[in-house]
Amino acid sequence: MPRTFWKGVISFGLVAIPVKMSTATESKTPNFHFLHKKCLTRPKQVLYCEHDDEYIGRGDTVHGYEYADEQYVVFEEADFEKVPVKSAHSIEIHGFVKASEIDTRYYAGSHYLEPEELGAKPFSLLKTVLEKTGLVGVAKVSFSRREHLCCLRPAGDIMILHTLHFHDEVLPPDEPLPAQKPSKAELDMASKLVEAMTTTFNPDDYRDEYAAALQEMVKAELEGIEIETPELPKMEIEDLMAALRESVAAASKR
Image (cartoon, rainbow, N blue to C red; front, side, top):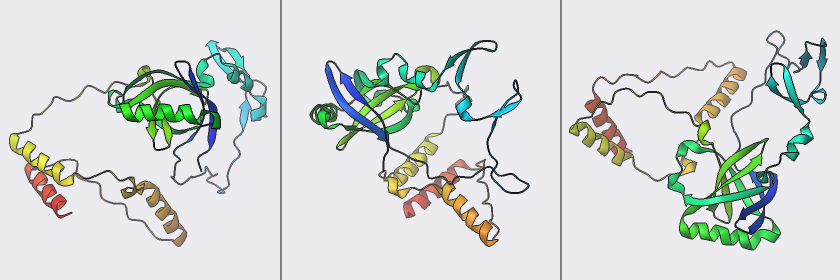
């Protein structure tokens, strides 16, 4: 079940909508623990203070921001609840844009937004307007000790809040290699391949093969079975047109 981890309001103009936010995704990758190689037991993670020559617990620590060499501003855990920004308890919408205007590189994570009882009607109003206009709301919100740029979009009876990277967090690509112009025949054949592989997106058609393979490796280790590593795909295509023709034929059969 989704876990509520933030409560506050959506604000746009003078309208305030009480909402709660919950996680929308979770990892299914198997968890592995660090073990002592010698005896295969889980070591305890400890903190060592070199200055006092002693081991300490998490309760003996504070957060420090280094403003000069080995000079710190100290923050207690409770201090992070006092950061003076509106986005700590409010999703303040700064404007509405077409979803297509947001470069996909900016998307980071997804969270569910649901109304509190008092906010049911204005929440529905905002969601309906976004559905009719095809727009998303661009806003900011703070959680997990940082402020997030985000966008709100309708999704059935609720809305989804997508966290976005700020512009200075998105890295430019490396200098690309010189472009090689394909021939008309190659373009035509590639277009046929794309056409033959065109389908509709159904998330149920896909699964995490890596996680499943890890589970199989665990099972094989328990049963004493050796796993064969698959061959790496060819990195070089000797005849591009021949590869395209074979791909089109295989895709057409599927």
